Length: 150
Ligand SMILES: [Zn+2]
Image 1 (cartoon, protein in one colour):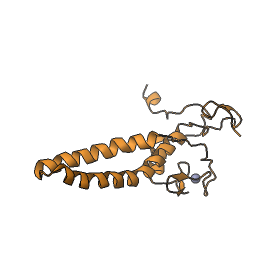
Image 2 (tube, rainbow, N blue to C red):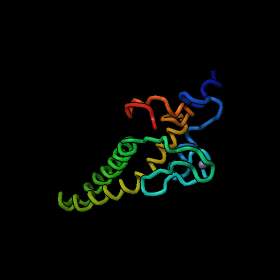
Image 3 (cartoon, rainbow, N blue to C red):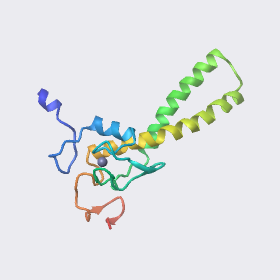
């Protein structure tokens, strides 16, 4: 019973190689390859590399889509709303002053957090062998793209 609880979660693909989810997410959050932890995960802002320069792990399969944006909205929204409410309780100010403070902070916080969050999502996808990370046939039909991958 206890041994079953410690089994790593994986979906499809090669079940032999272990891919710890926590470690993979952490490496992605730090902008590192989820496989080796040494290679850079991004070559530019929000642009992940196709292949790790250190270990050669294929990372071009990743399709984080909108999940990083949703996670950033949840994180930044909770943090800034808490800050807004606490500030308003201590220093009541007009709506324009709050807007001038919190709107730029929201944009800045979103820009600062989106890439680490995207890296974490890629790490999660890699650990779960999602979107081609599991060694699936490259020519298999991808319903998201409407046909065989080229
Ligand atoms: Zn690597």
